[in-house]
Structures are given as structure tokens and as C-alpha cells.
Image (tube, rainbow, N blue to C red; front, side):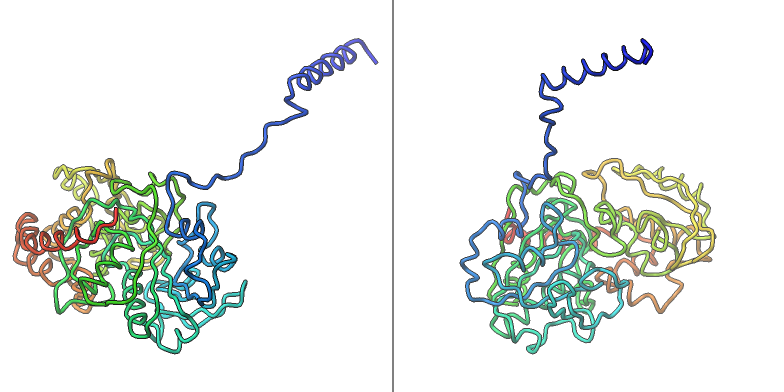
Length: 421
């Protein structure tokens, strides 16, 4: 062995002994497990921390999907099933199914959950309200699904229908509360009017309502006459000013086209327009609700005119994209990408009105309302036909908003009675 190799052996031996002396190798720093959130807890977290004495001897049915997880990303139904004080006997699935694998609007049938062999009753198939047969083996219905704070998202109406069934069959109904990812303060948009009530707008609430599922359930039950035996397991550590990232939790896609929490903030801007199938809104591409484009749009002109409006908290960037499916599949679309610079200041519903009005005014040969068979869907999602008629009449966005201001103020008064935080 030459002198160089001997010196290297001595050098590394000294390093090893020094490390052992300081405990760095004999006692390596332990890897910390993922901590349970201490400052913020969902209704599920608080339920699991309780002694569950109130559920003794009761059979539980759970309405849920993959969005309902605990702080360690474990599914709600798994945690409840494995809890020694809880007896989970049935599952109920909203639109998209128990595993959120079905497309929007796709009917889902009965299934069996493979891990625990539990029945899974679909509430978005042959029926959207639980039948007496579906509830005959349960004493308590629990709702645990993450909502996105938008009126047209169907999960809150699955909850309302299940509450009606619970009232009918004299079952206890419990909501495990979760945050509104868009904060619990900002309210914007019009109010649903009769005769436009539907499964994307069953009650007269604002498009961006600023309420949690527990608060909505309380309002539905009292103000809108469901009158079931309702209780809400509240969150801890949630403040109304919080957007989703401030909860410290990871986002689980609530449905196939809501992969990120911020998607919910884009949705009020483009979702209504998407109902008309006149342009592509990023559905069918990598950024659902974040884009707006069509083969006939002048992207640079569109972008310049939108940015000249100086809408708060948002910037529009010219782009092009080719959808893999949906509207204009395989065709190059030109348009905009929405970039949010300030979540607090951004008003997506108002931005969407400007987008829609611009498309109608600037491209008369490609009216967003050209497909008459899509108008009924647009009106249901919009909550009335007012936006449609106002844009056709050439009203300004300020005048359009003024048309529902009294209804919005009335909603805010009702809403205030049911805020839990």
C-alpha cells in the first residue's frame, strides 16, 4: 500500500471518529413524521379526536369522495371505518363517484367499496336523493366532502337532498365542516331566481357565496325549510379571511377538472362561458378554467383590450393551445391565460362578465350565444336569464351588476345569521 492510500485511510478514520464523538453518526437526526395540523383542524379531525360517545350503538352512512382527507391525507371513510367508536355501514357518492373517476354529468351506478366491502349508493345516477331503501340500515348520515365555494358546484345540493331524505326518514344528519377555499368573506355574483332553480342552483344564493358547507347546511335547513335533525362538527383554527393555502393542507382534487385549489378561483370567470360551448376554457387541456380561446380569436387584441380595463388582481396573457378533447378538440385555439396577481383583490365573477361581453361585442360572427340549445344550461348555471338579456341589450357591466344588487344585499342579511366562524 503506497503512502497516499495510507494517508487517505488515516484521514477518513479521523473523520469517522470525530463524527462518532459528536454523536452525528451513532445518533443520526431522526426523520420527523408528517405532523398533524395543530392550529387548524377540519370537522373530520375534531370528530376523530372526540370520544364518539354520541355514536354508540348507531349505524353510520357517509357521503364522501376523495377530497375528504385528514391531515395525513388518509381518506375520511377509512378513518371513520377504523375508529373503534364508530360503526360505518354504508357509503354514498356524489357526482363523479366515490373515487371522482367519472366525467362531469356522467351517471354513476351502485358499487361496492373494495377495501371494506361497503355498499356505495350513487346520488348521481338513477336518483339524486337517497331513497328509503338506501337509508334503511343507517341511523346517522354524515356528510364529509370538500366544497369549492361556487354556487354551481353540485356537492352542496347532494348535501341538501340528503338532508331532505334524513328529514323524511327521521335520521340524524351531521356535517363535518371544511373550509371555503376562496375565503369566507368575499361574496360576489347574482342570486338564483325562480324558475331557474336546478341541481346547479337549488337555492337563492350568490354565485360566490363565501360560506362553508356547515354554514350552508344550517342555512338550507332553517331558511329554506328542510328541517332535518342537523348538527355541524365545526373546524378549529379557521378564519374567514383564509384562502386554502393558509390552512396548511395539501389540496386533493375535488373533481376531475378541479386539480388545484386555485382552479376554484378561475371557475367563476370562465365557467359560465364554458356552458355555451362557443369557446374552449381550458377544459380538455392542462389548465381547466384558466384559459379561454378559439380558432377565430385575435389573441393579442383580446389581451390588450382586457388589460386596458385594469381589473384588480389579474393580468391576461396572450396564448395559444390545442385541446386534447372537448370544444375545438385538436384545433389550435388563440386567446388568453388568466394570471392572478392578488387573490384578495381579484373578482372572478366580474371578470367573467367582461370576458363574455367582450366576446359578444367584438366577434358578432361568432356570438357566444349562437348555440341556442346551450342557452337553457347557461341560464340554469347563471341562475337566471338576466345576464344573457342584459348583454344582448348592450348594458354596461356596472348596470348589469346593479340589476341584482338588491337581491345580493338581501342574501347577505340572511347569510349573516348562519355564519359559524
